[in-house]
Image (cartoon, rainbow, N blue to C red; front, top):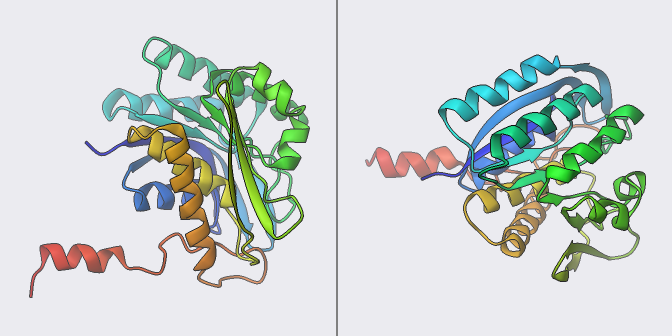
Length: 263
């Protein structure tokens, strides 16, 4: 059966990050994406012009709707919208999956690649509730510092994938820290301004792998490879931080057409 991924995150009207990047990633990696949208942004490659949080009861209604009918194999949480929503989502997921746990990936979105703030201080404070229920938290270096550092996050229970893209140098090292130790992935840096949505894409890619039954390290390795392939083939859109090439330069429709509509 196709893995069912519930994405709890904000909408990026420019299509490069957020729910839009999540759906494209899950689809390209062979899963089925379902969504609970937490915020609507007016956003392009130059920045975020406006943010409208979705009411908490509507976020919960979206979660309840898909879980009750379609079911869920893994959850990815991104931009959460408000402290009230963060706490409510933590409560709802706990009540739903405490007896039969599923993988939960939390990407603690705080600042867009353009520099726009996407999480208020009270929302960031509420992230602790989400980290306690997460299987894996995926902060970049500035986000990790805002969360109190590696030890503070690990003390809440989850494994941590510390993304190294904000470090200096020609190599990027992503470091997974679990109870069993550390695993490193080091790759040459891909220099491009079309890197909007890397964090969303990576977290959704990992969630897809876990929902498909992959071990954590294998899911991370595949997700990193997908991010790097998408960085290498951007469509070149916008004047600022442009989107990656999630479709990898292929036309999935053409492949489907060849299978279902032979000449």
